[in-house]
Length: 443
Image 1: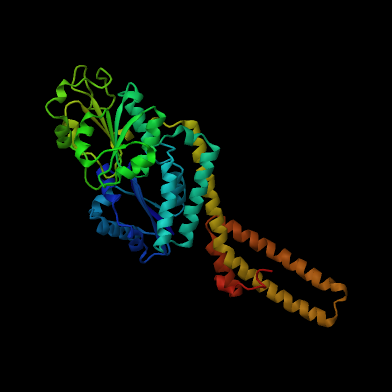
Image 2 (image 1 turned 45 degrees about the vertical axis):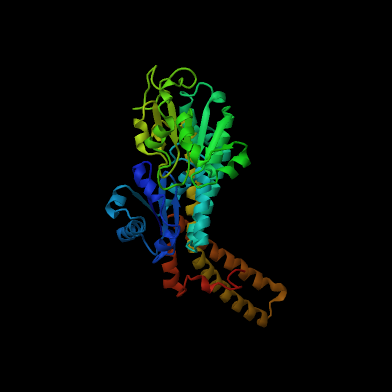
């Protein structure tokens, strides 16, 4: 049975999700011990462990998963339990399909999660922790996501975290073409951020990489790289600083900003002439304040220390604040997307149910066709002019098999496939294991 233990932006605080995002790459291997397989999906807004357990999942399986994650992450198991929710059986399928389609994201319809779901499966394959059912689950999840993307307006209505952050920044940046932007980080998120900045008309963009990859990134994208010696001053004088690194410790704090400002900063004009009100709770500015500056922290773990918000004239916009400002879902697009997800989940269950009784149906067909061939051989020896007896017997076998085969699929769709398998063993003494399949059975 499939089991999912999830901690996400709806159930867990961001600091806990930060710690979970740093779980070891081989966690799925630990979770798969004693199970058929496991896939771990860890992003900045969610941590999910998908485990294919033997038999029916119970509280012991959940406790084992939480204990393993606790041991590997260093987070107390009771805290994990209080910050997690559990899905089992059929609910796992619709949940993952919804996640992959962006329906469970901070910003409904955001596109990054689809790639993260695919990479989670790729990682599990790399470590040899998948199972046939998990493979089918994640592959069908990607198919459902593509259908949602192609058939609904959800993808167009939903916005990525980067776009939402810059939408919020619009109220602070009067003219992006004159804004001084400092980008801290050079990963995939940085590239998306840079492209989004340019869409808004930003030209004065510099990049700093704490890991030393700034020069290569700058050369590739046609912007200026800042050496470490210039970082503090550039951070202090930028209109907006956007951090998006994978560093485990803050790359910007109050001390860096104050060091970069120096004693002369108070005489500098406010960017774009005046300070403007900030819509972010707890970070408002008034006219005449020291130069207003926006720090956007897209990092997970956090790239910016909380104390920067204490620096005069600085507003801090982090992932948690972005989530609070996520726009209302467009109900029509969301409803259409959820309908697609539910239909895809129903198909997944139907196909899985049919597959669960397939070995039994094959065994029955093999048994009937075995008897049929023996009787046809006897008829031939007695003289079957024109093959009429053989034709009649084959027709009769098809008629006899039709009802039990249809009934098997009906029972499977109702979750009662085991009843058909048990009846087959009781009446005919046939095993429903795939090993009974042979050429006659598939005729």
